[in-house]
Length: 151
Image 1 (tube, rainbow, N blue to C red):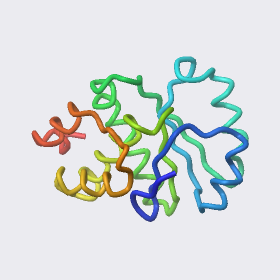
Image 2 (cartoon, rainbow, N blue to C red):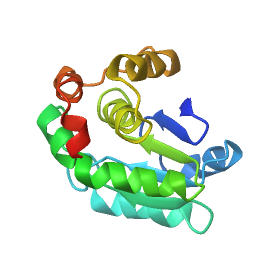
Image 3 (cartoon, helix red, strand yellow):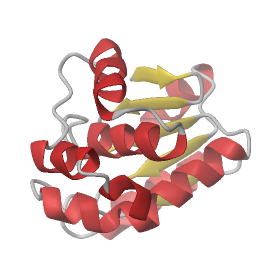
C-alpha cells in the first residue's frame, strides 16, 4: 500500500483478511479495478464488498488488464467515481491485481485531470510514491496530447 496523496493510496489486490489492515491505515473506501470473472470470480469480489461493510465503502470499476486502450476507455467511468469518493472525504485504496499498471495509470490520470498537474509533475509524484509503478506509456502519451481534458 503506497500513499500517492493524503486521501489516495495505490496497491495490489486486497481480500477479506486485509480489511483490518485497511482500517488501521485509515482507508474508508476501496476502488477495485479488477474485472469480475476475469481477474477474480465475481463471488470473490462480492465477499470483499461484504467484508468492507459497514466501515469501508467498496466500489468496483473493472478494467481489462494489460490493455492500455481499456484503461483510457474506462477513465470517464472510473475518474468521477474516484473523485466523488475523495471529494466526499474518503481515504481511498485504489487497486488492481498487482498494483503495477492499472491502478498507477488511473492514479496518474486523476492527478492530471482533477489536480491539474502537468503530466511530468504527476509522473514524478507517482514515481516518488511507487518507484515500481508502470503506468502505460500509451496513457502517458494520451495525457500529454491533451486528451485528459475530455475525460
